[in-house]
Image (tube, rainbow, N blue to C red; front, side, top):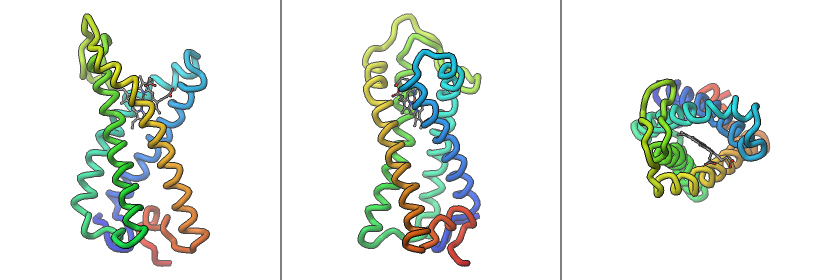
Length: 180
Ligand code: HEM
């Protein structure tokens, strides 16, 4: 269950792969929104972008808490260039919390009701709160694309470690340990 010096336990692995799938859906729907806005295909898939994003936020908070509980047991990132890797991971956590939170601020300030997974979170209002909707319009997509770029770099480096430098790092998150 718990993490250890050579890999990650079941809970961390569940969070990692569940969130990877949900993030993939966000990449897919954001790309549709960017290139094919106002089409039936985008309307269909983008309608789940909202609930999916809220679920990602909940998982990011739980995963962050679980990461802190396991901090002293996890594979170390405390020397030289590894410190930079740790900073990169923290930035990804921070964006996974900030991006949906910014969208929620915009949803709260908009005229429309907001009900992720059918749960009534915000009621409709007569007039929108301008600063909230402007804030969301300005930053949500911007930080979203930065997160996707970081995730792409994260995936590339995992493969470089495992197959070019022969340090079986991916196994830490699949089998849960690096040993053959
Ligand atoms: C981690 C979770 C999320 C990620 C990574 C993400 C990512 C993105 C990205 C990159 C775009 C830009 C698409 C474009 O440039 O056309 C976007 C658009 C949008 N997202 Fe999200 N999103 C997330 C969660 C949410 C949530 C929770 C909501 C609703 C509360 C939401 C509502 C929207 C809306 C309305 C748009 C279209 C307007 C805009 O571009 O800002 N997103 N999202």
